[in-house]
Image 1: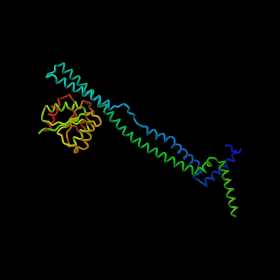
Image 2: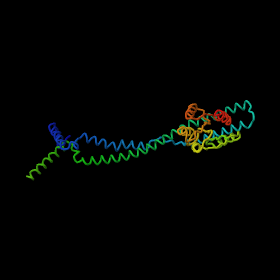
Image 3: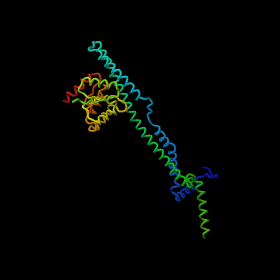
Image 4: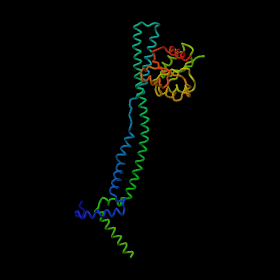
Length: 194
Length: 124
C-alpha cells in the first residue's frame, strides 16, 4: 500500500511494530482478526440469518385444494350409491342370477370408493399435522426475528464503542501516525506538569 | 330389556337407513350421532351395548374416535365398537382392529341386523 509515497520493506516492518505496540494499548480493540470476525457475524445477522427467519415464516405446504370438501362430497355420493343399491336390492323379494351379479359388481364399486376416501382422508389428516407444525414454525420464526433485532442492536452498540480505535488495526500507516501523535501529546503533557 | 345401540355416521341418510333396519328387527333402542365428535360425547354420557361406527367422517374420523376410546376406555364407558365402513384396505382394517374395534365390517357385505344378532349372540 502506498501512503505518502512510502512503500519499502524497512518502513513496513516499522509499521507492523507500531501496530504491535498499539495492541499492547488495547489488545481487544486493535485485534484485526477479532474485528473481522465481529464484522462477518454482524453482516450475517443482516443477511443469512434474516433470510432464514423470513424463510421459516413463509415455510409450509400450501394445501390449496379444499380436500376436505372433496372428501365430504365424495362421501355423500358414495352414501347415495350405497342407499340406492340397498333400495334396489330390497325392491324385490328374490333376485335373479343376473340381478345378483349386477348387485355384486356395483357393490364392488362402493368398496372402490370407500378405499379411495380412506386414502384421501389419510392425506388430509397428514396435511392437518403439517399445518399445525406450520403454526409452530411461524411462531418460532417471529421469536427468531426478535432475537435478530436484539443481537443487531447489541452488535452495533459494541462495534461503535470500539470504533474509534478499530480502523487503526487494519491500517498500519495511520496506526504509526496515531502512535507518533499520542507520544507527542503525552510528552507535552509531561513537560507541562514539570 | 332392549339393547342400546349407537350409530355414529355423518351421512344422515345412511344413519337413518341403519336405524330403520334395526328398529324393524326389534329389541334395540337406537340412537344416532352425526359424526365423530357427537359420537364421543354420547359415549362419554352413557354406556351402549354396541356402537356401529363409520370410519370416514369429517373433522373427527373413525380412527380418531377409536384412539380416543382406547386412550381412555373408562371415560367412554367401555362401549364395544364395530367399524361399519365402505373401506376394505387391509392396512386400515388391521389398524382399526389394533385400535380396539371388536369387528371390521364392510357395508353391504351383510345385513345390519345379522351383524348385530351375531355380535350379541357371541357376547352371551
